[in-house]
Image (cartoon, rainbow, N blue to C red; front, side, top):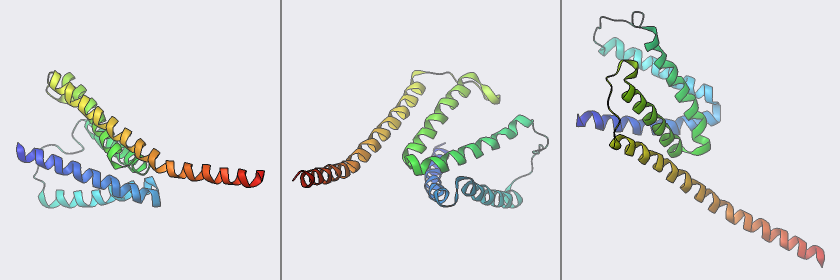
Length: 172
């Protein structure tokens, strides 16, 4: 159990690195092109993993209930939104906002037992976890706004000084 949690943390770290890289690429070549590269590489690598390592299963992608294939569409939505969001709001806000969205939906799915999952009771600990993530998002957002305001302050001061100097010279 501990190993799978550590692997999940590592995959989350990889997603943040991917978001940063794809955000930069998307700003240069376009959001859709960047997403296409990611999905193309993912298709090739996943195909190789299936060919060499995947065990045989009774069901195939053609025989499972069709609603189960819809998960692939969510990956496209996630990728495009992240590639577009990261250059505008930064990796931390985009990632924590994504995690908050995941928490909200996962608690609904768990509580309701949707999509074939066994229901898990909503309790104070689970709500507290979601509140903590919402607070983390708020803190990062406020910190980014503060840094942005501080970096704009010297520019505003320089503009005021320049304006006052021009007015002083004009009046004389």
